[in-house]
View 1 (cartoon, helix red, strand yellow):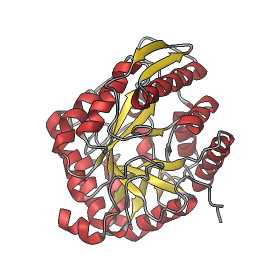
View 2 (tube, rainbow, N blue to C red):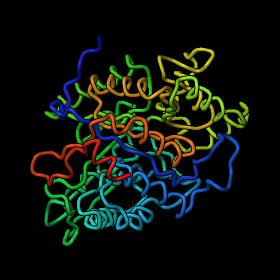
View 3 (cartoon, helix red, strand yellow):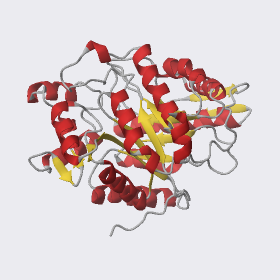
Length: 385
């Protein structure tokens, strides 16, 4: 039995169930055989996001990529007024935009959404630059300091290794008071773990075996405790759910039926984070899986043959998927970011088979921040449909 982790939202008996907006051109029916029908454009991506909103998902990740796709902040700002209930987990690349200007953009988007904004902190290299892991995370630390000063103080007064800024901060105030939007963060290096422990609210992990997830959570909890803090935990993972397990496994095989190893390697290696510690852990997990690609019950690594980053999926029937999610919740995971292929189809299937069986919520806001929405009941899910 895996020991529970001391988390910020230990009393929460619900989960933030989120979906993924493929604005980085990652949608398809068959991985490795791109169909222009699923290309990243405003029509396709906004349709998926608004579908997730209608079906009752609590948040949606709007990712960021330099290679392909749409601009994250512009997309989020355009779609925000069209949403009704869903939060937007908007990715920002620290160092890409001058921090006071970034703070103003985030605060503006937070007001458009009336507090339904969350932020995914990214610390990767910018195109044409190469920094050490320690320097990349130090740059992110400085960006976070400046953002929070701008949102909570009348003046920004910061001196660091990357930024020296003395500037009035009016009107750069977020809609969410006393701290601004929740900060989600994913990273595996010691410098990244330290940054999250000190400043962020939700530690996002990619799929691994339960024992390895527990190790990550224990390390993060201990580090956060050294700062007098607690963090919540999230899992970014794909999903393939069908009425029966055989159907789900057949769908997984069909998804990978048009990819060869050479094409898969090219897809994995073209990302800026292809050499990161997190990606190497996904590769190691694939090497430990069985001949069908399963590394533990219902955790299938085959999807990682054709994508960088998050490289595994939950595969099974509704009972099996719900049971696995409940096991993760028992471990202390409170936020889930799911996706599937094609994204809209799988979004609808998950909402049909699994979502009404989960008690969902928006991630709790730290003390003195404005509350978001109460948990949805299965009846509310049905009404939204």
